Length: 328
Ligand SMILES: Nc1nc2c(c(=O)[nH]1)N[C@H]1C(S)=C(S)[C@@H](COP(=O)(O)O)O[C@H]1N2
Ligand SMILES: [Mo]
Figure 1 (spheres, helix red, strand yellow):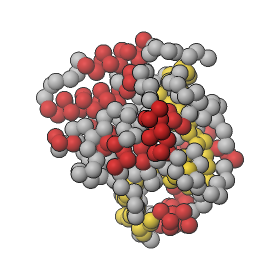
Figure 2 (tube, rainbow, N blue to C red):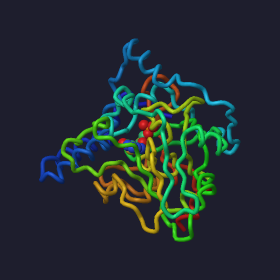
Figure 3 (cartoon, rainbow, N blue to C red):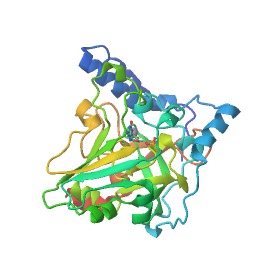
Figure 4 (cartoon, rainbow, N blue to C red):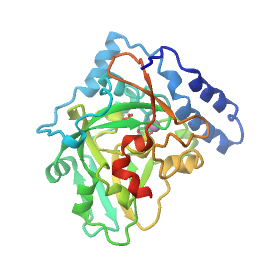
């Protein structure tokens, strides 16, 4: 195992590749701007030493109430790597509604999570609006440790708390015409003030989508917590999607609406840059992103420093036995 103190050369070329595509017409500029954000992320890994005051502010964002009782699903009780250090996981995030860098944990505290409601609608027999208490009461909450792989070639291992998406499907009973599902994130132009909001031409709100068989897969999960506690705002409180065989952008945060549809919905990154961010977006080391390789990843492990470890990326992020037959 090799630990890199400095960015390896294959990562630096990403930044070089993005700068030349900047400053074309407005539409292309927006795409490049956002694309640069997502692609050049790893360069911000270094040099983010926090002061003691910042560390205690950060801790206050994740030392939330514990979720009890909390059985660990034995099928997902461990992975082939250590669980990522919580301080790092809660301060290295993607949540463009709250800023275009990885350091959005402070601004994400503006997300208003009181009296949260999730509307489940569309082609279902039992449309219903859930609040957090009814989700916790209706579905059995468990812990699952999953590998997590961002399209930007960094990864973590995270202990999520939540329930399988298929349990919610069983409750609302999709009609036979339902073939796709759209998931919509919280959006309020007065609160979510990430990059380019004032330009008014980004496809907000953040939306993601699945084929209905993907949502029914054993792995597809709604998280309402992490590290045994309620979900911090920067991770997409109070409920977010977790799809461990797909790139991280498929997992929308702070979900307010779930719609069962008969055709494939438009999604955020796929609308902005379709040739870079597909609708399916399964983790695939053999298929490079147009601007970088996906063969390896920078795994952020259990030390409190960003001493990432370079690992080979696994097909379907190591979950082929669960999902490969969906794509046969
Ligand atoms: N609403 C919303 N959901 C989102 C994103 C976002 O910007 N907005 N970023 C995605 C990306 S690119 C990743 S890698 C993960 C990051 O989740 P984490 O910050 O909890 O690790 O959230 C995904 N879900
Ligand atoms: Mo990502």
